[in-house]
Image 1 (cartoon, one colour):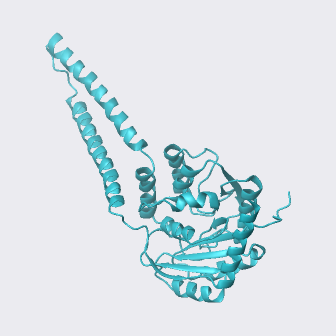
Image 2 (cartoon, rainbow, N blue to C red):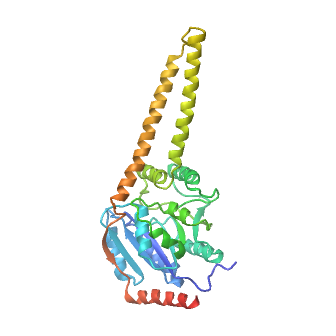
Image 3 (cartoon, rainbow, N blue to C red):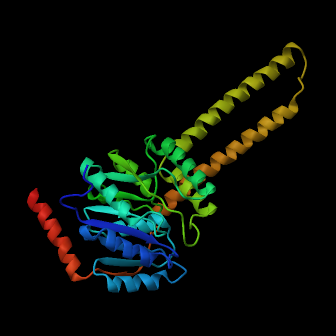
Amino acid sequence: MNSEILIPPLLSVIIPVYNSQETIEELVKKLQEDLKDFNPEIVLVNDCSRDHSEKICNRLAAEHSNLRFISLRKNSGEHNAVLCGLRHCSGAYAAIIDDDLQNPPSEIIKLLNKAVMNNYDVVYAKYENKKHNFFRNLASKLHNIMAGYLLGKPDKLYLCSFKVISREVIGPIISYRGPYPYLDALILKCTSNIGSELVIHHSREHGVSNYTLTKLVALYLNTVINYSTKPLRFVTISGFIISMISCVVAAFIIYERFVYHNIPPGWSFLAILLLFMLGLTFSAIGLIGEYIGKILMSLNNTPQYVVKEMVESNEEHKNIVSNYYDRQSSRV
């Protein structure tokens, strides 16, 4: 099948930027070269980087007419930054790519082709060999297993940050107003029309991964607490099972006491069982507390992010966007 699209859709590329002063300029250069036939809109969202990324992004916005730069006032997290980018993009499709150059920008074309040719709402990248360290790969696998159980993710689908999303799904996603967005969960709740495409993955050449153990744990908790009630169901079922076991043990002790007038040995086992039940009770209380805390934060209208600065693309590119949607409307 020919890899070229006869009528390329207007494409936005969302890049969450965090401490990427060594890679962001090269990434933008590659995007401009590899996607020049698509006239892409590039949206850089600086998530309060601690290096010179903001300064570089400002310069890039001044140099490129099709580039929009948004800087956030505080570090809000990758998914919040991506959501901000989606709200300020205008493409019929949006590609989301990391700022570390591990995903070649030219691979966006593969994802876009797959989405357009097969009318997919979302197309995820999949990797034959992912060039992360052992710990990061293990964490990704565990996260995908958990997403399968909690979010109903299809078994063969691999969730990752590199993907292409259609405008039909971007609309419902950006309507989410909770303070803890998790993009993949929002996608899975919006559509089941999802594909995947094999792409290349390079080793990291600059810096280290921004995903620390703390951030990965926070992501897992966000998935568990915000997008599924299955943990509550698990605690309920576990409590019921342990209660049944406790009733059986109590019946056995009563039987031994009144039939044989004997208190059986094994009180250490009962003490352990009691401590286990106590631990489960506290875990259940903590889990419920997490849910209540998240609800409180949502009711308090905690912002997902706060924009510090925005550098818009120039009028020429805005006219291209307007003309594209005029053409799309005339086809309906």
